[in-house]
Amino acid sequence: MNHENEVQLIELPDIKLVGLSVTSPFQGHDPERVEAMKRLFYERRGEIRNAVRPERYVSPSFSSEVLFTYMICMEVDDLTDAPEGMIGFTIPARRYAKAKTKGDPYRVIGDCLRANGLRSDGRALALEIYRFENPAWPDEAEVLVPLQR
Image 1 (spheres, rainbow, N blue to C red):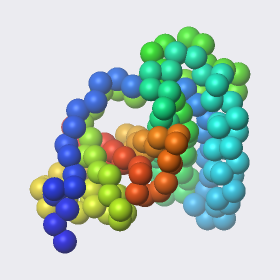
Image 2 (image 1 turned 90 degrees about the horizontal axis):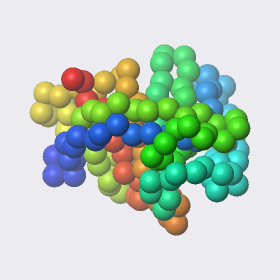
Image 3 (image 1 turned 120 degrees about the vertical axis):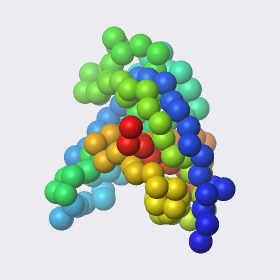
């Protein structure tokens, strides 16, 4: 299936994020840990100051062969005031493949990258962007996969 029309190649500037994270092993993963972190984030999101786009949140993630880390954050314009127990960090400017689709966006992006001789950067953070009002996966999520430089 040709997914090239569903995928955009975009450049993003530095992104400052503040939020919560959870790291879990692939074997024996308990999805409730991620759901509990999301509930806590929803309860505490009002503590995050300097939000750039308060209508949405960003979920960066990365994985290795053993562990994965999933975060739920808000984009901010200043990292000096992260609430207690939250992490603040900057994702450097980079190029991404972006998709919003009813199917699996990671598969759609992967198919497009392979068809065009591009590769994802496994050492960088993938991003999922959701609107607070309708955070339905996968239909309403924008998925951004980092590209190798």
